[in-house]
Length: 208
Image (cartoon, rainbow, N blue to C red):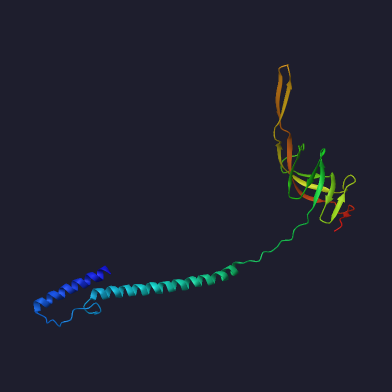
């Protein structure tokens, strides 16, 4: 607007000077703001504004069209990426109660336990535990009397280590007697690999 008013004032002053120099008649009309040929600057600026607004409007239309196209294509892409998951059959769940030394342990295939130190067993050695007191599955239970005949638990020795330290403190009053002793019990970590040999033993069927 400021540029338009400045151009009008400049053209008006120029027309006044020309009328005084050439003695134009009073009936000569003054340039009006509606005429287009007297104000090339103003018309060019308005045309530029109009063209820029049209280009901006067309750009918005194009961008909106592209956005809708992207939104429409998203469900197709998601449907194409969906892959049906194949469910693998679960293996038979089984556990056993085995006696090692003077303790009883519940063991599962694939898991590991810490037991008392197994003398003469080295790392990666395969061992067989024959004192199986009980074997259980989803539908049947094999109860030993006192052990399950021919049942065996196979395992692999993974590590020979030590338990956490236990503090043994001895004290006698009025005797100046104090003893502080630490002890770490040696242990063995074994991993259960298989439970077998129980199929021929009479089983107890669980009621569903």
